[in-house]
Image: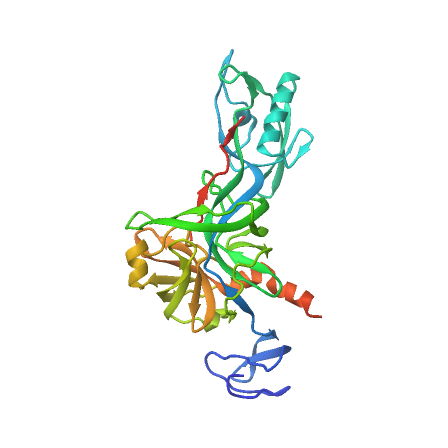
Length: 384
């Protein structure tokens, strides 16, 4: 412990912070006493091998097929006046469609087909939705729209999204990746998308809109080859998206250790990101503050961009930079997650340790050995 060798059943006196070091993976049981007398706590500490990953910084396109979500209500012009059947039945923005008639996990197209079929048959549409932790059921009677000549229930729904962000790391051993550093949410409802199938692909930065006070800038990017998938994911969490790569674009990158939270200190650091084409570059930043956390959150670090080249090009942190790795003393310490709108040279970062744990990397290795997400939508929001 620190510089003192700790033997079984040994008692030592330690003031302030302490670190437990081991030459091999092991498990240690510790008892803490105040003044050597009063029991304070008992801990079981697992000492694991240092985790090394390949930091990325590559610009990626992200495409998502999600559980169909209610994103709006529409008013329908009928022969009896203006009507809103779904709103009157009790459906709300953010409801996730689990069942439409006998169709499970329906796509937008399938919802439209079922509404039309029920309308022609003079039957109500049977809906099952997920609202928070509840599953609710509704019966909605379609009405004939005089403007579209279709049967409708006054519902706007969406089941896909796409955008650009930054790949944070890849584990070249067991293939998990982490990216973005924050959740993908619907723009209208601000509710997390429930991902059915997610893909990451290569992306190229074509230009930069500089950030300024009150206006976050953005990377303008294009997807290079949407048919060539780099990885798949379904985990869409508050600290990023996580899945497995099928083509590793970090091959050739040096592996670096992941810093534990208590190894991160205020001071000089670097970020990896793309500001032109597909070239990953390193830029200087300062870690202004390390925020103590007891559970995963995307706001564990406060960072400020100090690199004159990056400040001149982008004004600081811009949309599309989310997920850019933060390095300090040769370790991966975190990833960019947010920009301060009124101070675009500064923003938040998430601890890399949280992302590693969420990625499932540790569990997969055991099996082997006995930012702002910039949104666009793939299709139009469908009105039903």
